[in-house]
Length: 119
Image (cartoon, rainbow, N blue to C red):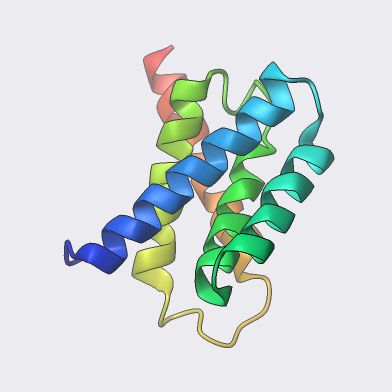
């Protein structure tokens, strides 16, 4: 993976979307569906298509339960992992449906494994 402006933007957006969804979900008590919906709609309104899709995909990770993402720190890690997966699989998954959910599930599983190792 090359470190360039585009990839840094993707990583930052993935981290922000995951973390914001987690905060809306767990700290503000809105629940996973409403939290994801708010982030997704805001992304669709304020971002160009590709970035909105990245924000929405990353937001799925923030919907995870406290068992999977026990703190906002792990939401940050989950967003980082989601961003890496999005960057590294962009060409592989081109034109294939279900990549958002698959990407989010993989990021959540890896993050859960990391949190299990640390705690």
